[in-house]
Amino acid sequence: MTALGELIDIDDRTVLVLGQELDLAHDRPDVANALAHRAGDTLVLVDTGAGRAFRAALRTAADRIGPWSRALVLTTHGHLDHVGNNDLADELGVPAEHYVPARDLDQMRNPKSYWARSFQRIAWAAPLPAPALAAQVVSLFAPMRPFAAATRTYEQRPLERIRIGAARFTGWTFADGAVRVLRSQGHCAGHAIVHLRDCGVLHLSDEGNGACGAMADADQLKIQTVLGAVAGLFEQEEAAILTDGHTFAVRRGADAVSHLDGLLEQATALHDAALGLTGGSAQIRPSAFTSRYAEALAGLGVGGANPNPLFTAMMALNQLSELGLRPEDRRTEALRPQGIRPEPTDDADAPWSRPPLRPADAPDATP
Image 1 (spheres, rainbow, N blue to C red):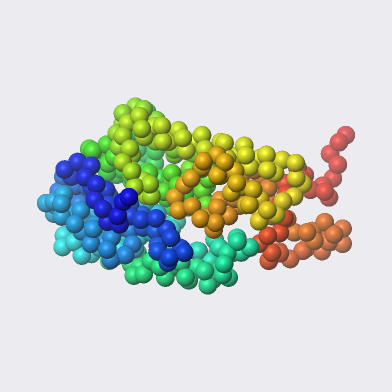
Image 2: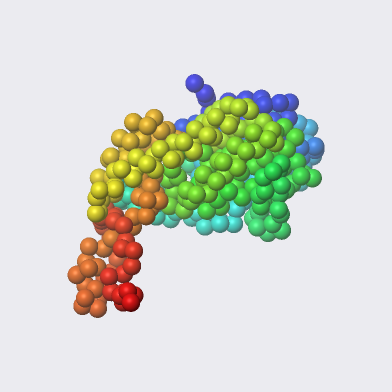
């Protein structure tokens, strides 16, 4: 068992600070792992977790790897469990910079709205109306301080082409190239991963959070692409140690490659299982699909960070979308011949189906 704020020494200038799992039943927020690293005379903090106890642990880790005379705080993405102590950048007593992804600014400014949209998609599975549930979840992470006086967006810096071995990325470098922030944008719209050159750490953050992304702004192709690219870095010995946001593990070399390959194998196996669940159906309701999808997850032994019914339902919707299904408005076919445009349905559990390859009212192109 690990404890919130436990420190794992990777080397004499790199420490992994462990977070904790989500437990909604007991009003306990998840807290993401963070890294403290010293690059020359620069303290580098990768994410800041959430909560006062984690903040204290992060300060302890920073002191352990000192001395340093400047600081760099890097946010991998804007989710609550990663950004709660970002104002620490202003309290380190040295000149500091803090960077966040521009595409995640809206959710950092207004997390209730972001989570309400996520929960509205699965209203049939949520125990409360989406706004109330979002407010309840966000409250678990108080105090929430995602911004500092030093905060800027990565995108305010020129975008760089970054080559690591045979792999090519875009992103930004810091500390004379010792710290590389690589755009990934799979887990959510602004996500980035971080490569610490001198110690060989590749911090995947939440890109490895399971076989299928859960968030409404997740991109499954980008998740799978970055997992494959990172596995290549380990095979080329351009990275030596894999850490992430939620598995509380330090994986080295071949173990890291095996873990990444396993995530990709799970993704393809789950896709195949989901295809079998929908292949013979003209339409399927998300609630019914989610029930069978959860059984497939269990049967395949597929895990992921923070498994719970809400995230399973969110994953299920993304899986349906991956298969090419879309929510349908049951009134559309009846109204189209009358030339009436139907209003969008508010029924989150309305059936999904595969759209026709061409609209029913398209002219016949057969000669």
